[in-house]
Amino acid sequence: MSPTLAAVLLIGIFVLAAALIWLGLGLSRRARRLEEEAPPAEPAEPAEPGGDVAAPPRPPRLRDRLGKTRAAVSRSLGALSGRRTIDDEAWDSIEEALLVADVGVATTSRLLDELRARAVAARVDDPEQLVTLLREEIVDDLSGIDRSLHHAPDGTTVWLFVGVNGTGKTTTIAKLAQREIENGHVALMAAADTFRAAAADQLTHWAERVGADVVRGQEGADPGSVVFDAVDAAGGRGAGVVLVDTAGRMHTRVNLMEELKKIRRIAERTPGAPQEVLLVIDATTGQNGLAQARQFAEAVGVTGVVLTKLDGTAKGGVVLAIEVDLGIPVKLIGIGEAPEDLVPFDPAEFAGALFA
Image (cartoon, rainbow, N blue to C red; front, side, top):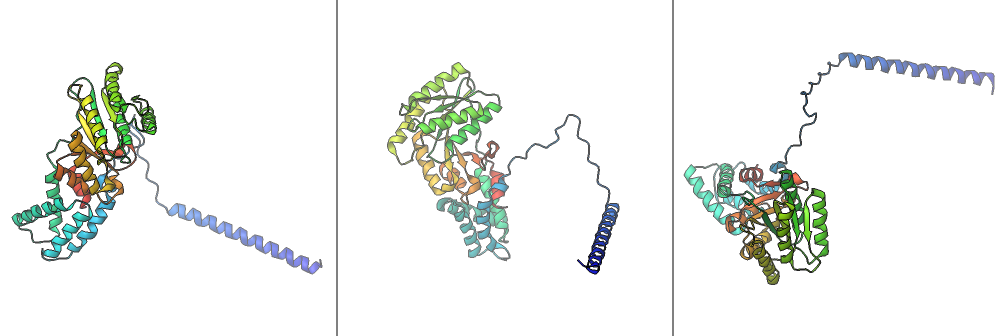
């Protein structure tokens, strides 16, 4: 390499190094200036002595979980915005909203009649006010109903759970068993679905997870004998609540419905039992859930409904059809997978979430 070329390269290296040093100094001065201009950070408030650092998780809000049903209703009710008079098109929009939510034709017709009467009595002439009146009408229809889960005043409480496969019956039992245990009760699960070994295995798995006892029989054994053994064992084990899982059966299968009647008769040998016969319905089935409720109510005298998967459907209006048409209270609703997502049904919260 010639001396001239070497000198040029050396000078270039020195120039590049100087430029990098200047750039670094400039960035450092700018960072210090921004720190000086920034307002001082607010001091963190000291924690209360002995208090928890993190706040407890907020219970699930129904409004947050009914998004699909609310969106379907809102699309239909959007036609009311900007209208100046209550005309046939306004009533058609409300009817469409109720039908879209799977309230059902009969219940929708009755609600519209009551809403018209309420609108006349209140001298309402603004179409958008009809939504407020409808919300009030729904709350009135669903209020004044006993939605509590009943326990025996003394001795063993027996709850029967019925419903078709895939509704979330077993997980509902597990969540309620966990709740009873947290409330200081000893829970015992009865695996009366003896038609499938996997069903008893699943219930046993859940019992181990939540800390409940379990009674199961051999595959193909008489389901009634499992219920008898469970109730009998409850006294010896100090169990306060027996939760009976039954076979997932189609409501149209007469012989299987007869089996359910037999299970109930065996439970009735304990005075006052069963305190609850809970029908677990998948909300995504919509009006088919109403048919299930009707058949099960006739067969085993359903005392309440647990409506699961309400967060995953636009058919939440089936609550109205079940309660108004059949007079069976919806006692619990499932709005998620976690144990705390099985919550008591609140009519005012439901109506507010539906028409928010």
